[in-house]
Length: 197
Image (tube, rainbow, N blue to C red; front, side, top):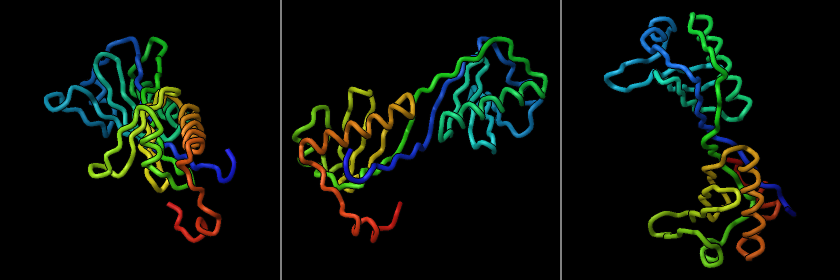
């Protein structure tokens, strides 16, 4: 990539955890303070951490869904903290937990304007209806992600399984848009006068 490097920020990582054992959610709710558990409203227990700021949905099957991480390291740190909290309150995890990232949601700024009409014409797997939605929806095959691309060069990336896939998707779309003549790089003076988002 020549010119200005795109900025990428991970907004949320959603992961599933399999513990390979059943859990007594009632016992967990009685043992660990500040958890939310109302089985008539929702079958899972809601456990919120402040540091790192994550939310875990814990199910009696031994499955968990963890959301809110901004990096893989933050996700792992939070999960280890949940295991320590369980252990501290007498909830033993006997098997080896399996953590799997399901979705990485990120935002990016290409630091270039995008001609969405050219992109819609030249790219496959796109949806672009400016009367309905101001962005172009592009389904990328490698890596398998969905990009919402706006004329400002800002994007939302969803469906990635890792932070590396997000970076690869941004590099790929940048090169693709550049090769079809859909990018207009913003000169440095214009960038300096803009507010950073």
